[in-house]
Length: 106
Image 1 (cartoon, rainbow, N blue to C red):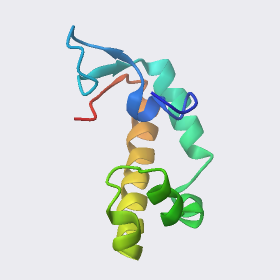
Image 2: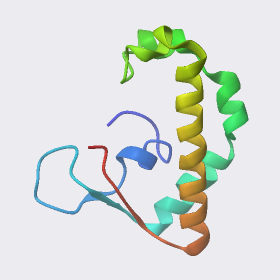
Image 3: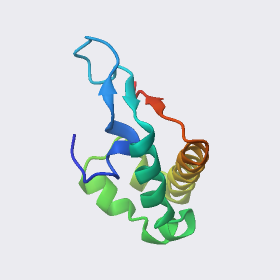
Image 4: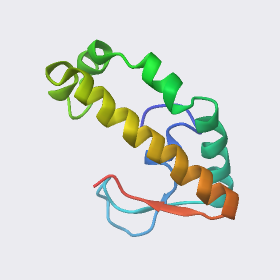
């Protein structure tokens, strides 16, 4: 998957936990990567993420769900910023406990 580690590890990181070739198959992200993800996310708090939000850039890049970025305006922004804040909390808490995590984009 695209992106730079450890940023891309937050969603697409880890190793598949099955032989399933489907990219939506669950993946295991080791504790060391969880700590690196949490540290990276800490450098971009949700309020700064919101300031950098660019609906046109998301639409131009065909980022899923591509129809909402321009159509839904501030509602789309609130949607993605709220989930980004949850992502920060998830990885911060997991890193503080020394946990590994399982992810699935499906």
